[in-house]
Image (tube, rainbow, N blue to C red; front, side, top):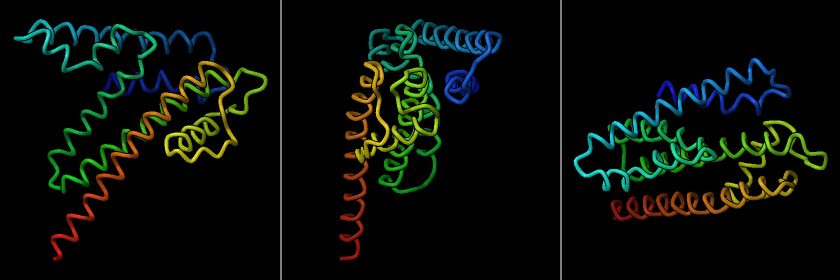
Length: 193
């Protein structure tokens, strides 16, 4: 979890700072590589110890993708979510509330990662209207919630690809959240009857 938090810092820093010095860039790169190596070793050790290696890899696609595809490095941060899920499952709350909290945290996480990436990609472009993390986060929240005001939008191809995936994931996550809340109300009304 500590490595995931360190990676979050190294991943996020360029979005919050207008200019990153070369020494700071080197430090951030070292943090990212150290966390990558640690997660790669973790994956290798878990595969070696697994009785059924193929089954283990199929059940842990995020760990596999985060190690083998460099552009998916932010997926390593999902380890924080899995830890949070484990904590939530131990708390004695209704199943619907537990699922709703997981979906809300996942949506916020995706919006944050998208905001970081979009800010880093769009800031240097002349015709971009996303120049700060605040702009990027506002864009990400309006995109993931499907509001889409249109006051902030990506102009680069990479930014539009991020938008595409954020839209698809946002619609899916909000659909799950809406269905969970609706099921919770139905259950409550049945209990009242």
